[in-house]
Image 1 (spheres, rainbow, N blue to C red):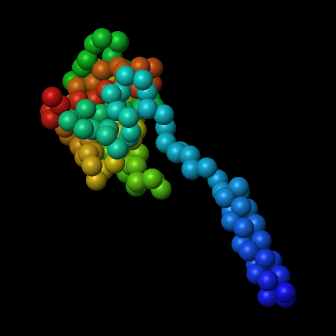
Image 2 (image 1 turned 135 degrees about the vertical axis):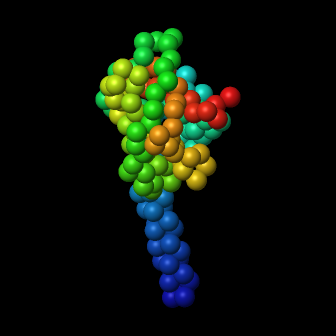
Image 3 (image 1 turned 120 degrees about the horizontal axis):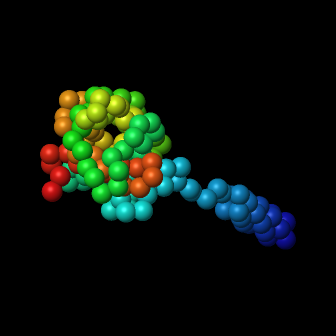
Length: 139
C-alpha cells in the first residue's frame, strides 16, 4: 500500500510540474520590426533577395512617391545579429542633392549581403518611413 501511495504521489508531482511548466511557459513572440505593406517579403530573412532591400528610414527625406533617385551608400555599420539571427545594419546614404538618409537594413547577412559603402543604389519611397533600395543586382 505504501509503495502504491508513493507512486501516486510521485505521479501527481510530475503531472503538477509539467502542468505548471506548460501553463507558465511564455509564448514565443518575435521582437522584430513589422514588415511594411508592399515590401514583397514575408520575413526579414528575405530582405535583400535579388538586390531589392526594404530600408527603415530614421532621418532624411525620401523622393516623392512614384519617383526614384540614384544615391550612394556611405556606410554600413552596427551589424551584429540579434537573438533571432537578424542583422539591423545602420546605413547612411548620400542623396543626389547632397543630403543624407539614415536608415536600418533589417536582414540576415548570411542569406543576403549588406549594402556596401561606395555602391550606387536606386531609392524610392515604399511608404511613410520606409524606402525600397535597389542595387545593381536588382532584377
